[in-house]
Amino acid sequence: MARRLLNRLTDRTYSSNDAVNAYVEGTASSDEIRLVKEMVRKNVALEKDLYTQQALRAVLGKIEKIEAPRSFAITPEMVAAAAGSDSWLSRLAEVFETQRKLALAPAIIAVIAALSVALLTIGDITGVVDQSDSSFSMAAIAESDSTISGSATGSDGPTGASGAQGNPGSPGSLGSFDQSAVTTEMAAAVQAPTSADAGLGLSVPEPTGQAASAPFERTVDDAGGTALLVIPEGNAIGELSTTKSAGPDESIANNDLIPSDAPTSPSLGTEFVYGGELVSSPSSNKGISLPLRQLQAGLAALAVAAIGAWVGLRRARGE
Amino acid sequence: MTSFDEQRLIQLTRDGDYDAFNRLVIEYQDAVFAVVLRTVRNRAVAEDITQDTFISAFRKISSYRGGIFRAWLFRIAKNASLDYLRKIARRSETSIDEDIVYFSETVSDDKQDPVADALNAELARLIEHCMSGLSDEHRFAMVLIDVEGYQYDEAAESIGVSIGTVKSRLNRARARMRDCVQQDPELLPASMRLYNKEN
Image 1 (tube, each protein chain N blue to C red):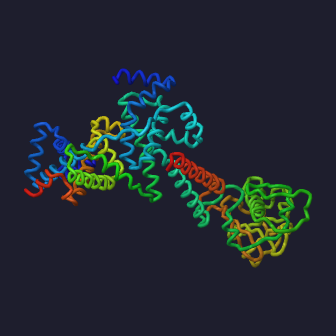
Image 2 (cartoon, helix red, strand yellow):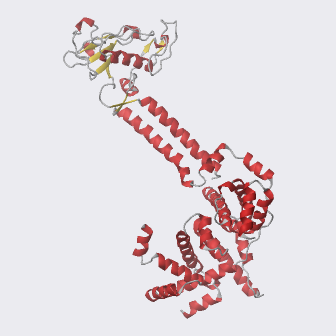
Image 3 (cartoon, each protein chain N blue to C red):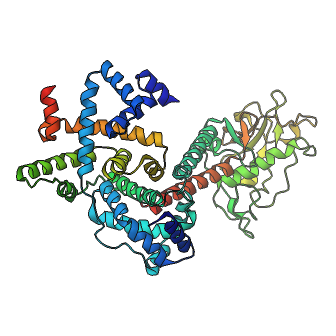
């Protein structure tokens, strides 16, 4: 269609193309000869072009035929060798033999997957997308610039999606604290009150490890409805406590200040206070909740696999 | 070889008969090698590609679904040739100068005139130079139709495009060749030089 339009714009139609070809080859019908002569009348330079093409074709036709330098007869050994040298990629490449453009499919998939990972990461950093499961974004933790030392390694085992590694039987062990363990346990503690039987958020889920056994509690700000978890600076997780506070600097570990009928809706903003700094939990309703980590890992794996398939196919085809 | 024989040999090949297939090889090896050599312009590579073409054809004979068998062979050869050309293009390799020789040596003239022979050799070199400037697809179309003299339908089946596309490619290829050879008008055949003087 586009070509036909282009030909029309350049005053060249399919029939004129055919006529020119036939004229050059000396096989033109009377109608085609008439058409060519008409074209020559309109464009005198065309006559010279046609003559040159005729002469060129005559020269090309005079080139002697090439003969095979040897016999190309095949043997069963040749076929077996060719089949033996075929990798699984070569066999896969044969699938694309008839529709070679399909060979681009893995590359396109890889690009889409990589772009999706990039977008999810950007969304995570900017807060547009949130992790929907129990662990919240590392971005918020990173912003707090808090390196928590504690006894996470003494946990009995992983209790959240972030997979804090437990070390049963060493409850008192101290050492480098895994942030992901903290986030899991904290998030679990924070999310628990949103359930019907959470009891104003004071009921922290039953701890399963040392980190989770910390008696931190949750409180709700009367005015703003903001829940705060306070981690006193330098304290181990076991010393976590919640507070009702007008601000992070006024943190008071006082469970009694929490009204029994305090709102506990899921939309409640949740903040953690650690060492006088406020750390917001992105599990609030600021962005789109998605299984972010799983999506990122899955898409990244898909991108790597697709790139591998694409490169392999190209190699199998000898490119 | 009659069409009937060809179909019978193909059927025998489907049953794994190497002798039957090798009769087809003998029938078509000159044509396949010529097209491959004129496409890749490298004799050693052309031999390898031709051999691979026949091995591949034997293994894929079940995928042959009628039509012109030679065109089916050309199609396998063309894909292998263009794959090779793409590969060397990516590596920025150039084809070798032996390519020029095979064209120079193969322009024939009935007259035993040394001057004419020299001019023919120069003309052949010019043609080789101009053909190497064509795109792979355009060159393949020109080799099949203008050099080897195949019909449009067979060329279209070989390339895997419509006859209209073949005509279009050939048209452009001829126009580019025309522009290229006119850069050295003294090498053109006498009839063309005469035309130039008169016009």
